[in-house]
Length: 298
Length: 293
Image 1 (cartoon, rainbow over the protein chains, first blue to last red):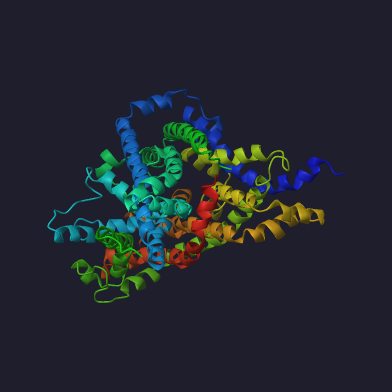
Image 2 (cartoon, each protein chain N blue to C red; image 1 turned 180 degrees about the vertical axis):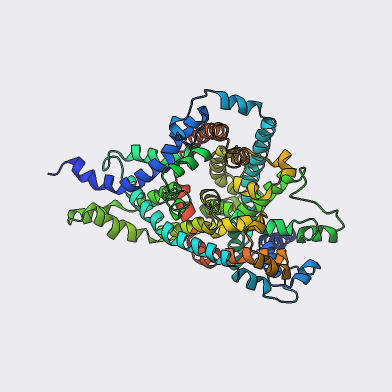
């Protein structure tokens, strides 16, 4: 009889290549967080540069506008998280009422599509259609007798433009899990409710919503980990210095400090702050999801 | 059958209209840009173009195709997908399979699973990531676009959960017949998971094609940029620096808007091409992996 370790050996070998790559490109950077406490000297590298203690963090706290950047990040992320639940749930409920299968399939095919386009492509499209002078959106507003809006250049509008365009890109894809849950509701429940004299609205309130509730709770809880993810890909490609006041977020700030100004220590410190907060939130949200719905990642 | 009430019928009609309008709102911005790309620059400048090309012209496409940088970046992106996607899939399958076994059959399963999941929960951040890539000597090479993103952990979790849902009996029977672990994986688990693997393959293609940030910061020279990184410099407006004198002359003939629209459309084309295949499977793919009891 071969030993257990020997029988499990092939399983270890299968994992090995991925294990090594993840070690190099995910775990070494985690160790590289030590840079947050150093002043990087390029010749000495990430792990041997001179130690400066908390100096980078002190610098970070003294940076003008750091509180504003945090506020912007949280505000934009919170808008996206809220819309990311409310809009897909509502749309799934309405789509579920459409009984023509061909129509339903067609609508789904169209609304899922923007999810698969990169923010580079969508930025190209948004910059064109939102332009105050030539864009089709302001053309439409003008036709309706409304004043034209500089969606990407007006600091008052910018955070909302981000939330709306992100919702536009992602809501369709977000409906998938809710449509699956709706399809899983036992039709006998509707029949029973109808026998008891419940109308359509009553059926939605008493059968459909309770059926959806567990998945709504799960998706809301899991989204908590995004409180500081305001969406780098989108904002980096659409913002400009004139909207920093309301549009600059942690990730774009890290990029400018670290990559543009080569101030590695401070950028690592700011990034570490974000990673730690996100880790706590994601950890808490997974625990909460497990408690509330028995959800497990694997 | 009881005739539906007036209120009900009104709701049904309004609901269909609303759904159609929402779908249109998702599609029309793309149609607008497509129409601009096929219109003459004078018609575009005059604001005549909405959803159909005005004064049909292929000038902007001639410009894009005649621009060697665009073709070069396009080829790098194709190569990136061709090398990156198979590597992603091989590693995903090789990690997901052992992790789909329970602890009775693979003692270290949980430790390994947490090792991979932890990387989804916590990261070193941008700068240490950049420094690590620099340290491994692949900065400004093609491999910087491949190796750091070689293990898509989220896909591993999806496939792991799919493997878990396969009936154990088939593999047990194969093992009794003398099949090795490797044979059980490649001859049984993989063929039985074909729909899930097809979905993940398409996800990897789209992810590699769409990714732009790595190209932008890990490549020092614009000649090494994949398409989306190159396009980023064009759209966010640092295009002039990358243009040769001959480009500027040709560019003067067509407007900035039509040329950008054409480039956006060409970059979107591959995603449009795989979308029908993707769309067929991904709904089940998402649901199977992310939302299970």
